[in-house]
Length: 408
Image 1 (cartoon, helix red, strand yellow):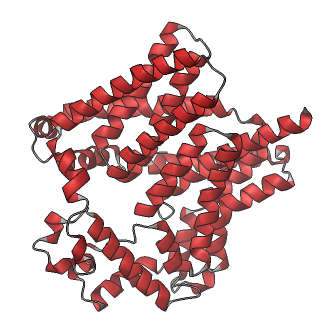
Image 2: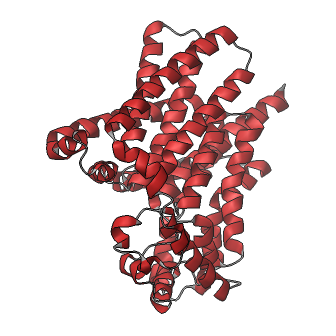
């Protein structure tokens, strides 16, 4: 999932494999409704394809979203064969070990960057530089890692709840601590907030289960002491972290839409909230001018960049910032229907998690919702494939549980 080219190739092979066994696919009416929700973004692009100025760019936008057809078609068509817990556990272990490999490689190949980090120099760049060596944008990587870390915590509690052998407990705890370490190392604000919120969701739902309360409290206390220790170490070593989460984030909020009045804005507010809000303001204004159908899937970015120039916002125009908000991005591209489809897509995940009372699904919803409030991951392949795959897995698991209830 975190490597675009291998992921694209595997999706193609996955589709070809299941086309061979197409006759084994089975769909219920409920399954078709879930599939429609998963495919809703690409269906919207097809519905409003006529609104694109460029045929080629319009087709490219659709091509990027084809996994939203492939995953529900073949995964939900085989929903009874999906092993939910085994898939998630495999994903957690594989992703954490892959990141461990890249972290070791980063230390070997780029020792000068690690030396700068350990000596407190240019601390702000470390997560982005590490993500570049993996081949993915830092916020996108940390969106994956936040989900991995929350799921890893769930499996720690799962291990104690089911009285697994000591060696399995140690392995699960080690995977969890490593995954949390990587979230801190990449160090994007939204992911850290999400991962802490996800931990609380897991803990809350674990408290509601019929387990040994004393054992749960002891396990939770030990884990959160370890987490606190890791977090303390990072804040102690990364002095910029305190500044980043306070002064940098909320600086210059009186300059919304007037970023050029700031001396060297690329240095002072490149990643600040004021820049995001200025972008959102422009996207909102441009969207209102292009209701009810928007500017078209292929023309969202070009029209926004042109609007920056028209409104004399030189800093935004120079760096060509995209919308950084999926709801506004779809409003700009597709008009009134755009944000409604984003709400349908994301909040259906919330419904599945709430109905199942499943901490991992609810955490995924929270992570993906907040990530799309501050960025536009249904615009990016990694966000589209990531959400489409797990949405299909969650839908399959939900259908399995409903089938169990019916058969009782």
